[in-house]
Every structure is written in structure tokens, then in C-alpha cells.
Length: 226
Image (cartoon, rainbow, N blue to C red; front, top):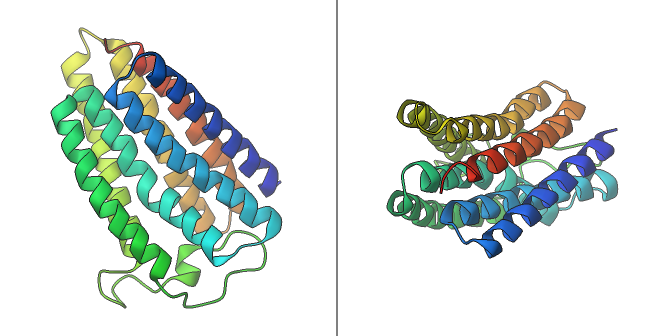
């Protein structure tokens, strides 16, 4: 069941990436490009989950899954929303900042030692294989996962609230699209909480619903901003 849900989530995310790339090629817009980047990260992380569940986890597969999914996806979703709601200058500055910081976080993720072997089946938790936050200074992958997700979530929710205030009377499609994108970004975080208490099937389901809500939000929001 876990494998099937993971495949469903990965296939949905991949379909969204194709849709976004096709839309960007037809009419290049920076928020579409940023969302395509974020969903590419999401899609690759989802396929790493499929590989790990079906064939077993290796160091490279788990680190790619963790770095792209647990650390980078949500901030780059926020970058796309910043392009859409705040404009190109703000979006570009956030893109530059997250790109530099994200590359450093990936370097840490791929070089940090494991404190325990990877599980032979199921989905290993970051808390099982990486050191506790603070035990090795502010340099472990779990530290960057926490910081990037908090910043990315605040960015997503804050921009959704700002768009609601700014565009409610003039562009409710944009408000609705931003709200759906927030839901799509929060579903995987909620699934991660369920996974932490042992509900591993719910994690795969949350990835699928996250991709589905993101797809809906992008379609609605993209038709709202001309």
C-alpha cells in the first residue's frame, strides 16, 4: 500500500511538472518557472521515495529524498508565490537567496554522517539517521529542514494572506489559487507529522494530496494574473 501511494504521488507531481513546463514554454512567466523548479524537486523526491520503498534505501537515495523533499521544496514554492503576488524583483531576490542557501544545505545533507544505519524496509525518519538538532552545532540536515520549512511556510501563508487582502475585491481567482497552493504545501508537512507517530501510509497519501492541491492552485492562480 505504501508503495502504491508513493507511485501515485510521484506520478501526479510529474504530471504537474510537465504541465508547468508546457505552460512556461508557451508563455514564459517567472512564477511558472519557479513553481516548475519547486515541483521538479518535489517530483524527484517522490520518486526517490518509490525507489527506497520498492528496492531498499541507499545513502544516495535517502539523502536525495531528504534534501530535495524535506528541505528545498517548500521554500521554492514560496518563491513562485512571491513572483506572482509581490512582483519580479522580490521574487528574483528570494530565488537568489534560497538558491545559495539551498546549495549549502544540500552539501550538508550529502556529507553529514549517519548516526544509525538506514532501515531495511519502510521509510527511515530523519531523526533516526541524522544527529539531533544542536548536537553538532547548527549544521545538521535536520536543522536546515526545520529552518527552511518554517521560512517557506511563513512565506506561503503570509503571501496568501497578503493576496487575500490586496486582491479580494479585484482578483479572487488569485486569492483562491494562493489558498490552494498553501494547502498543497502544508499537506506534506502534515503527513510528516503523522509519519513521526508511525502512520507511514498517511505520509504517501499526504504527498499525493499535496501534489493534487498544488496542481489545482497553479491552474487557478495562473489564469488569474495577466
